[in-house]
Image (cartoon, rainbow, N blue to C red; front, top):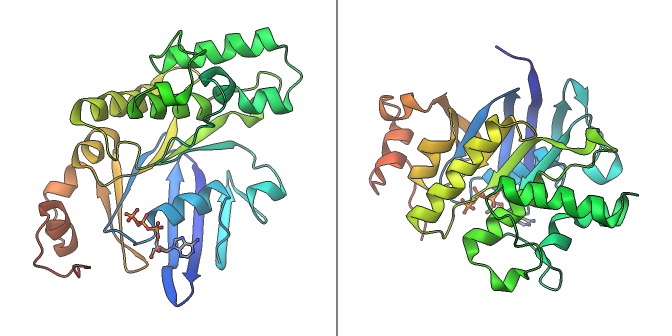
Length: 260
Ligand SMILES: Nc1ncnc2c1ncn2[C@@H]1O[C@H](COP(=O)(O)OP(=O)(O)OP(=O)(O)O)[C@@H](O)[C@H]1O
């Protein structure tokens, strides 16, 4: 087994009266392809935001490569870069694709415009969108916008390699996509996992069966604030854990309360 790259210890988070995460322990190892699954509203996105340093837990500790994180990501950089691909591509509509992908480099680096353009083009090629840098997000399909947001998440500054994302967090990257567009994104997630300059470790939140099966090696199942089950992708079909059986079959009968 490789070393832990991210460790959550005793993480709790309450919104109002809603205790969303209740003393959660979770470890992500170098090279993990971890799927986080569970019914709606069980705190999957919240966990990703806590790992990314965008949301503070109420209690508990977060270790990044063995170093305890203090505060949020804005309070100090982690030892490794952690990138997040959001459910909505979250691109700036008034900027071109190139300006979106190179946004942080244009804002914060001393690299020349030409150098940034080359780096952006390379990333766009990695996601299969070479040559579209001049277009605006409104001119792209939903799947293309997601791929552009991938390119932005894996953008690296050669002057600050420590800022490159070593861990990527995907929040429902295939939600709302047709099955073929989903396959393109799923393949991309896997490819980024293996190619040089990609992101070797990732966690993915998804409801889509194909995405669970094609992108995750390990799974954690969240429900009622707790990690209720962990296992490999193969075990998801063989375990007789009642929560997993109900969830994977989509049955309304079982221990998971049907909301609405
Ligand atoms: N900033 C916030 N303020 C108040 N409540 C919040 C906030 N963020 C999340 N919540 C609540 O916390 C709960 C968990 O939300 P979260 O988005 O993490 O769930 P999820 O498992 O990702 O859900 P889904 O599968 O539907 O996307 C929900 O009840 C949500 O309404």
